[in-house]
Image (cartoon, rainbow, N blue to C red):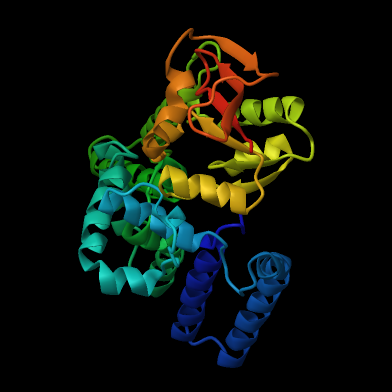
Length: 363
């Protein structure tokens, strides 16, 4: 999980809350400072190998090797420009760049992402969570406990403001909302039980069976919703083509020379091909070909998913979207040559796949 900076953010927020709470409780300040420093020292020991790895790979001391790239992807959605981080001359982008150059983006992105957060739970669960948070008691210790739990949401504020927000990013925080929802049910039933007990005393009601029943039903319902439906045989739409990238990569590993160098948009394909690779820039077709030649690429990998990201490849898509739906073709001779010095070497098409056309750079 430390491949993302969320762990650092949560630890900073949580320990800061504990530090302030200890001082507010008038605990010995020297002991509080020592505990704070020891905690951070231990955390640094844990993250130091990762920080060193990032420094070795990127040449910079940083918490995440992909913050700038992810910011660029999110900004690209706002600007309506796909893959802007791969445009020639793109210098990267940071938080201050976003704030200074695109102030309207922050509001647009925050509203869009908060709608997605809202959709993560039904209305009654949000209501119960708010009630459960509010009825936790207002003594200093109780407030400190709630603030400690609330501090774990600190990365969410950054994500919804600057980045994408999807289920995979918010679901780690749901258990704490469930705790507050459960607390609301227990307090509501306790309140009702006390009122009823005035007229019909009962030890059974004091055990709060209704809360237990509702929480059990909700837990089973939520668990049931997490069971994926039987979607039948694999199709690239099931996972956005991730497994298909693996299949294509293994196919290239089998049918291309082991010392080949490929140009591909997807690192996953290059990983499973186990070949040297260069990234495909967001540029014109002549510029893409020139980049491939300049970097010593032997093959250009054109998959069906690039239709939306690299429409400028144009004629190179022709074999993927014409002819039979299921094709496997490895060229041994001249073959299809859509433009000079580029020859179709391998074609793979299947109804379950995004498909791939592999072009060899010749001449």
